[in-house]
Image (cartoon, rainbow, N blue to C red; front, side, top):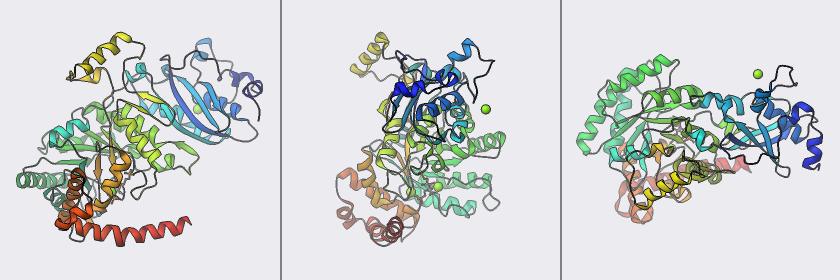
Length: 487
Ligand code: CAP
Ligand code: MG
Ligand code: MG
Ligand code: MG
């Protein structure tokens, strides 16, 4: 294997301008840092390929051009570290390259744009990203957070219990609202549209909104509990998306009782940031349908769930689906999904390769750090601490969960600070939606009391029926099918 020095000597002049193993301090605030898993294409060695990636993802192209200037060279992305054993490449991006008003779409167009299609690589996956405090300053981050939803619902020491209305599509607006009503009176907190919900002729958007409002009012009255509905506002164009938001607001929902769901990958980052900037008092719910094309481990190109989740927090999503860590139906592992959930929930977190502080105060700014520490020492809860940090983005945990899997997931997650949405896990209950909701509420009660669900089910019939249904027949069939496929 060639040494770093020999690799460097193999570079042409153009490539050398995109490599610097001697940057005094990559965390000096000038750079956004990225780490990629990279396999070279063709006859290139890893450093040649990495330099080509750094060029194409910042200022360069496949030849050194006569038009470059001293300043343009300062904007070159720089390969600054290699791990030759694991085929890992660290690249520093001068963040002045990026659109000044805090634009995630622009950054991703650089770092996972053309480069994913280059012949110079046969694998390129962005595994982790690090933002400097000065860069965090440029972005909105979340405004209305899970903490605000907790305050609205009066729910603090457990996950927010939610569902997705199923069948995924095909109900009329009245039938849709009936399912939502059943879940709410069964004790659930939160109902969401599914990711393809829009303005279908059999369930016109306006009527769906109207019926949900009636269902919510009825459920709130009957239960005395606040409820939340997350409306999918994804649309073909900007104006239609905004019209849907305004339709919901004008339907009389009180602030806090509705969230805006956006299919962030298929509708795009511009939609996510538009919603964050136009509706700072609304929970922005990032559904990540299609993320698998970039994140699945068997896909050598793309980015990790952690990277997707970090950019969602930067963009200001109040919550994003982060996966069930293998407990549910979707592909995912604790290392991947729980790292992502921790990475967006906490004020500072360890990622796959970078420790990320979400404070906008540089660590070497001792005075400000002292001021904040005194606050925390004095337990002064700052009214609005967004001046010092990027607020939390809530993990939304969905995908094949059911009441018997709530505790197993919490045990893997190590926290109850998330929203869970169980679709089939609720509506496939033998007795239907209300009982499915009751079973979920009972599973959560059992968890809080430290009692096994089997024990708790002895005098909670809906939970007993859920256990009989989900843990024996259905899952074993699916598990068997999946296992035979894998073997
Ligand atoms: C779950 C779900 C969610 C996926 C998203 C679905 O339904 O509504 O969209 O879970 O996956 O359409 O499958 P079930 P992720 O609860 O019935 O599985 O959260 O991993 O992004
Ligand atoms: Mg180009
Ligand atoms: Mg769905
Ligand atoms: Mg689910």
